[in-house]
Length: 147
Image (cartoon, rainbow, N blue to C red; front, side, top):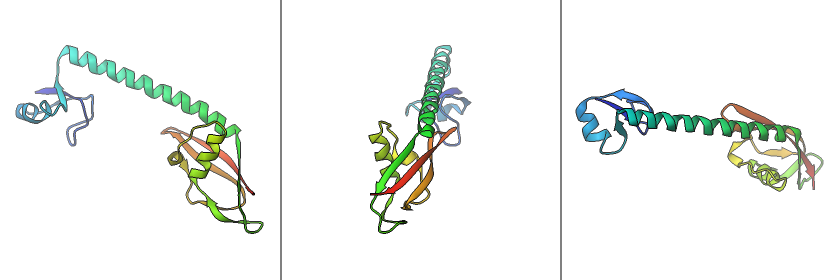
């Protein structure tokens, strides 16, 4: 029996794909748990429309990420921190601090997309990567200055 998977099923296939499975497997597991729907011309058309909508949504997100990348790469962010001497900080500057500073500048960037291998513990100029999209990564210039 051929079915269209509605959700990803391990060892069977990804959502939206048409797969051939044994009749009993489809009737007893996939169809009752709404993991799949039968292959009909109407269902095929519906799945194709959903796939097109998803592709369009992903393209819009990619365009938004490109615009945000431009803004981030033009920007130079200054974060003031308490320093004990001319080099080292009392605490450290983390991805959360960078996210909060960007929020003050009017940009909503979540801390989990700011790639910071380790917290910044010294004064200076740093370049931090921000992963905006699976294909788009921006470089943000950060100045850590003494408060």
